[in-house]
Length: 608
Image 1 (cartoon, rainbow, N blue to C red):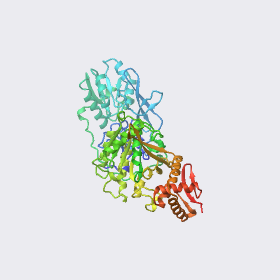
Image 2: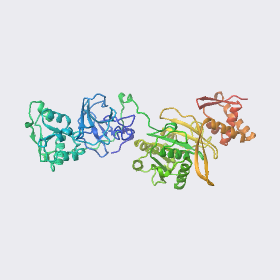
Image 3: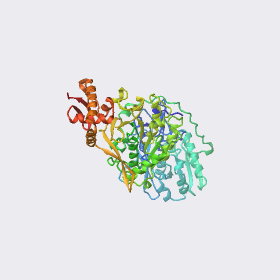
C-alpha cells in the first residue's frame, strides 16, 4: 500500500501503540517505523514486543486495532500512551538464576519488555538479550520425570506453579514461540509435555506451533484446552475446576492464520491534545555549533567560488574522523555518505585527500566515509525513494551530502513549486534513517530580483520552504566567504554570521599538497574588510559610496533592514567593492549599524 508522509509516526505524531517515531534513535528500543491508517481504525506499529500474536504484514509492521479489543491482547482506547504504573513484572532468568529481562504489564493490558541497565535502572528494549523460557531455573532444577505444562502467558504459568505443577511459557505471548524454540527443545528434551491452549483461534494456532516444535524431542506430548465457557487455564481453576477438566485439542484442527485485508490509503491524521502536550524529544546533534542535527535537512546556497562544496566536504571529513569541524566546532562521529551529481570522481577524491593531509587525518583509518559519484538515478525517478532507502541503509548514513539540487533534479524547472516534491523525497528518507542532510544549491547573483535582499536561494520559494535550515555563502574568487544563517527550524534562532577562507598547504615543493578550509570570526572578517578597503581605489570607493548613500536615502528612515552582504548585493556592482566601501563608511561614521549580539539587524545613513 502507499503510505503518505502524513501517515507516518514522527516526532510530532508518535505511534499510539509504542509512543515511538521514525526519527527516534536506533538501537534504544524506542523507534517505530510504522504509520496510522487513513480512517484511524488501525495503527501499524513496527515494535515486535508489543505485537502479541499479531503477524508481520507486508509493510514490516503489526496492524493493531485502535478502538476496541485488538488481537495483540490489548484493548486500545482514545489514548493509549504508556503510563508509568507497573501492574505486574514477570522476571525471566537464565539457568543459574541471573535476571535477563522482564515482561511488564501496565494498565490497559499493555505489555512491554525491559532489561536491567546494571545500575539499578531499566533499558526498555530487548537489544542483545537472549530469549529464554519463563521460570527456566525451576525447569532445569526440577525432577526430569515431572510433566511440564507449556501455557500461553506468564499469568497461567504462575497459576499452575502456585498449585504445585511445573509450568512455563515464552515471552510475548501467542505467536512468539520461535524466539525460544531452540532453548525449549534443549530444556524439554525427553520430558513429558502438556501444551495448554487458550480457547480461541489465536491460542489454538499458538499451541499447534509449540507442539510441532517439540514433538521430535519430547518424550510425550499432549495438547489440551479449557472447555467452554472458560478462556484459559486460570479461568478454569479459579472456577473450582481441576487440571483434569482440560479437554484434548487436535493440533491439526487449529485454524489457519487469517488473511489480512489491505488498508485504504490514509488522508489525514488528527493529533489530540495529549499528543500536542507530550514532551518533545531532545535534538541529537552531529555538530551543534553549525546547527547540524539528526533528522534534519539543511540547504547550503552559494554562487560561484562561494566554498559551499569545500565546506560540506570539510564537515564530512570532520564527522567521519571525529575531529573538530573547521578546527573550531565539536562533532559527533558518524558514517558519512557524499552523493555527487556535479563535481566528478577525480576532484571529489582529490579534495578529500588534500583536506585530510592538511588536517593530519589518515584516510586509511577512516572506514565510514563513502562517496557515490554521478549515480545513474535522480530524485525525479519513480523509484527514487526506494533507491535512497537502500543506499542510506546499506551505508548506515548519519551525515548525507547531496551536491547539487540541480544535478539531482535535472530537467525540473527550479522556479516551479514542483521542485518541492523532489526535495521532500530526499528529506523524508534522510529523516527516516535519522540522518543529517546537506543539500547544496546555487544562489542568486548579487542584486538579482527584488527578493535578493530577503533570501538568496535561486529558484522557487518552495526550495527555501522545504529546508529545516538555510545557509547562504557569498564571496568573490580569492576573497573570504561570508556565511549567513538565514533560516532555522531546529531551535528557531539563527547563528551569527561568520567567514570561511581556504588556503593551499605546501609540502616538499608541492604547492597543492594540502587544502585547508579556515573559519573566520567576525573580527577577522572586519579586519579583512579593512585590508580590502585599502586596496580599493578612492575613485571606485567614492562611486560605490554615492550609490549606497542614494539607495539608503530612498528607504524609510534611511535604514536598510539587513546586513552588509545583502546591502552590497542590492546596490550591485563588484561585490568586493561594495563590502569594502560599507566597511569604510562604518569606520568614517557615515553609516551606523544596529546589532544584536554579533548579528547586524540594520544599517542607517547618518552622514552628509
